[in-house]
Length: 337
Image (cartoon, rainbow, N blue to C red):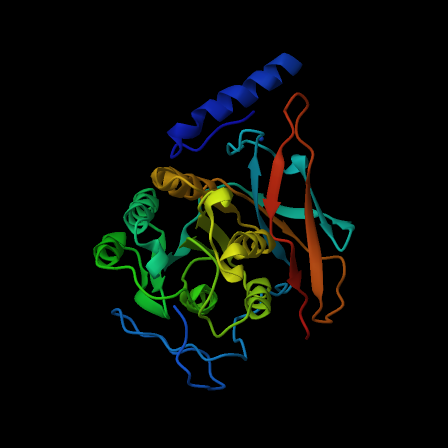
């Protein structure tokens, strides 16, 4: 019943465990300029100016008749579960069950933006963080595309979207740590750049060691932008053990902020204390992005009121499986016309 992608041999154990259950029973900152325009971005490593609101992110709205929801399923050991069928899922829109019209599991091309922290606090962590990013690129498919934003005092557009990840590798190796942390501005720039993606599946991978302390945008600004974008956020938070942390309030709030942004988008946050684990975590995220279920439904509520509508995906696993965890975006904005 459960099978893992051919691209994820390291997770094959999960398939064996789940099959056994079935058998026993007979799944970077801004300048001080103020402008009403969205941030200007340039390629080639030039600085990017980020002006505070208004936020201009293309809203994630219901299309003419269909809402698509990417869903990840994991087992109690956090291993990816594949091989489930459409009948194993239920979708609720504002607590009203919807009819699932489309269901797919194929490894479709994806556009990924890497948001890479190179602030001063990353000094002794930056090498392993680079290795993690390179490992993520290596597990890509030929049809995938990537872009790269690094950030410290301000976000820098290192490279726009390209299918040749080798170009990003070369540029990433030259990035050095220094300065403060404009995390929120970097995420905003990544969301804005996603409008240029050529695939229908889009994600940001954020690698950072703490909270924001130098952005123009606020947490509420970015939370709103994330809800308005059809982009999953995966975050790798490199945090010191809590007992040894001497952190500012912003840094202390970093894990919670990254977790909240990831959850609302349908992605996940991975907290890491040992930097040697970073490459394995990056590969795990890559595998997860390529082993998702895509559910499509036509909302029964046809009122075009522009309101935020909550989505809940419920799983009905085959008998004999252990408790499974479901990850999916939490809602969307209805159209206004």
